[in-house]
Length: 589
Image 1 (cartoon, rainbow, N blue to C red):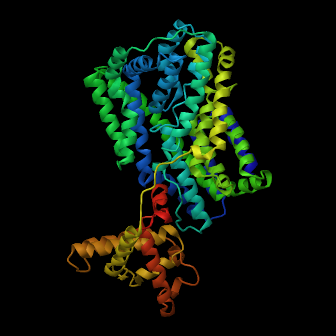
Image 2 (spheres, rainbow, N blue to C red; image 1 turned 45 degrees about the horizontal axis):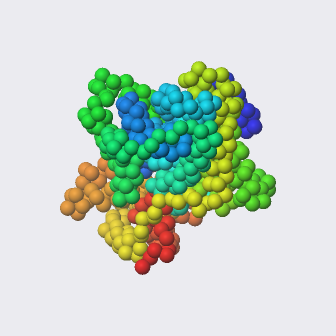
Image 3 (cartoon, rainbow, N blue to C red; image 1 turned 90 degrees about the vertical axis):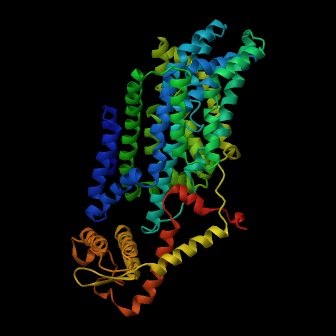
């Protein structure tokens, strides 16, 4: 039956059905056929979706609309003209100077727009005539514009970095929870560190393309321009407020500014300089820019959220585990696995946009890559670099069609023009894939024994000061230690949350019990937990039902409750916090 569903989903996509609709349809089907009890299974999937917008991942996802809007502001203004002028003044003396400028400018522009199509349209009309004027071959110029339209996606703050980090973190967290029977486990991955992992591989890609451009320029005897210090100083002075943006973002994050805060500052900064300093933006154009940028944001978000429900079905159906079993039988080493992965991702990059590819393919390959011993940051860089190349891979690479449409060229002519650049990108991919040392994630936050002691003190204080026993409206007595015996994760956390809420209510009431705040907290908890008798408490046979008050189990349950309280106080919630909590044992003083 699963095979039939897969064929039906592919057929729906081939017929033009929106990918988010296919995700939701498959997820809804999975919620009705999986082995777990009806609503529990579907609610688990929906809980993951809601957590994207309300939990810690929302912090990362909130950066997407901000950086996209900043990119649209820069695309609307004359940023491209100023950046190209500055780059030409500084690099025009090199062999192939204008071609190098094209690669450099496209990388900067794509970093902010996050979409290669915007880069080709915005910069192509400016650079293509200049390349031809400088006597670069037309085929080379066409392939250069098409091939460099996506080369900035590995540099922060490119949006795909944040999307990949969020999806990978959720996937591995879900897998860890499944393997541990619902208990939250830490994963060694942080989006805050991942956004830096692609800087060196991105520079390797630019370097390979620049070497090829210089060789062509020397062979074709393209004229060079003498370096003019005065012109360079003027061009840099004019473009400096925009040139420092990517470096400023990196410095902010390195110095402890949270990514959403850095994104918000970027939008304010770009808005100020483009509208008040350069005066390229008007109030009349602002509504159109907001509408167009938020339309792209909406498309990205609906794909991410619906794919999260789809991923929940895949994990519940144990599809990644089955895929891992097949990979173990098929590939005898991680290097052969990486070859197969590169081929797969190149095909995926041809057929799907980068955001759809991330949310569909990452949940399938991440567990297998972990089993093969591939570093998660290295995997992410390989994944995104493959999708960059997929934009240019014939016969259906997106950049090929955008370039042909923009410059009114037949698609086959664009394909032939782009093949040398495709070969250069594959060389860069091979270097990045088989030299893992090129992938350098951001530094870990130093966490030593002082932090651990502080956590333990806080957890102990909460245990001592928290209310230990409550009387429910039906007269039953509920103890804090009994919360740990509840097997259902949501019910267990709800139980512990009740005691924390009541503790706060009594503190606000000067230690008095029975306040309206306390009554409301208990009422809300009872209403949430009601609906199916004793089974709804989620207790197992050994610790639940009528044996809640069994004195022989109180001591063991008390110990379990202490451990659960310590876990909660540690704040083990997301992939970012997970990587921080994982720490480095060598860093302890």
